[in-house]
Image (cartoon, rainbow, N blue to C red; front, side, top):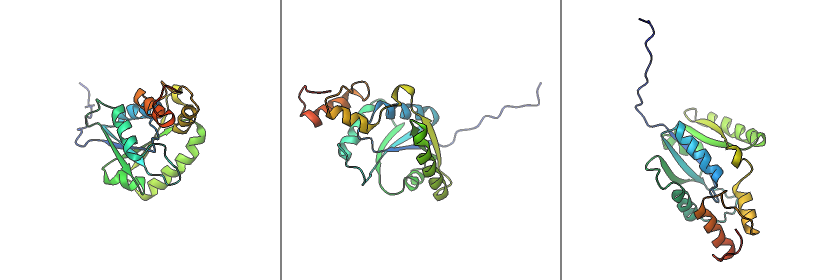
Length: 179
């Protein structure tokens, strides 16, 4: 018989992470990061950040609705909220242990690394977890999706079907033109 007795940790608290973004609109890259975040955490709070430097195509209510429609069977594992002010303060008050950040390229890392260090200085209880975007989504962003859709490009498969329809409504009044 071995002297080694395996340690089995009791899970007493739900592990929560916050995934922030403008989600204007939510893309398959975002969905990929969220689903993978759910393999690491019990709950992911998708936090729509209010960014005064950006003029969104979709208002907050539309973005909340599109995100909720993207996860119809998530139960209480996904929450959707809005956040203003310091994200790290929001995460701490919601009981989150981590902020999830998606990385598409090395160029994303420099800025995200600086943010992570500042967040760590402000609130040591909240970690930043970097997840690489799945290879098939590495080239997309909400800005690229909107630009392609605005010019009639086919973005189906890059965003959920209901988001594709919302883009069509915004740019072409719901007609059959474009996307």
